[in-house]
Amino acid sequence: MASILRLIKCILSVSIMLHVSGHAAASGAADLRARTLVIGKVSDSPRKHFTRLKPMVEYVGKKMADLGITRTRVLMAKNNAQMIRYLREGKVDWVTETVFSSLVFRDQAGAEIILRKWKKGVPGYHTVFFTRKESDIHTLKDLQGRRIALEDPGSTTAFFVPMTILFGEGLQPEKLKTIRSTPSPDKVGYGFAGGEINIATWVYQGLADAGAYNDLDWNTPDHTPPSFKKDLRIFHRAEKMPRGFELVRSDLDPKIKIRLKKILLEIGKDPDAGDVLFSYQRTARFDEIDDETNAVLEVVRQQMVRLAGKLH
Image (cartoon, rainbow, N blue to C red; front, top):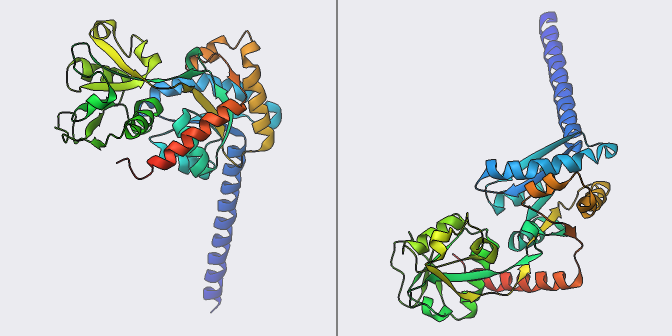
């Protein structure tokens, strides 16, 4: 009997030790997370975006030492759904994104849009539809029964905007199994190229009848090589929209959020921050969300609601 009691005491002692150890580990992990500033990005090229985001989050983190920030981290998501989970679970503090994804994160994860980003030196951009010079496509209506190359489902100017415009013209987009598939004669077939240079290549090589992305990509040699561009032409331009935004998760410490806004709004005045801004997708500066920008966001949100269920 005595040996049984000793065994029970031993088991209880081990259980208590494991519980205390587990609690301490959880407490330590929570403390480490609270001291870490995490920036997130949806990307199919994690290594490329890591090098762009790391200098910025390190710069900001150093200016938050008095708030308890001692570490920084870049966390990539493979798609918007994964980033929504990261935001809801508190794994990401701060996200940089385009209009469409920013609204998705705001509406589905409660993220707060805090600043507009002058990405690649400009506050706004617009979608362009293009084709080969000898093509008989001259208007959006001419896309019926044709194939158009887009980027991916998370792109604002190379998916969401083109879809909005096509539906607005009374056209019916249909996703193709491959870009070589034949679309229905009464619909516009679309395929995902996965990158701007691929969109330009597909159109140049005749795999797609047309392509769509933004005017900055059209004027960037890495995305539209001059050897391609001389044989291509734009046949439709969309209205301009904001280039990008900075967002924070809904339950981020208010002190961290206020400091982040202050740092980003003032970073353009720091002579030592030039390389940081250049790495951060050649950002010129950040500014507050004004009434005009809010109005644009509301228009885009309404378009998203109308498109819900139509995209496949």
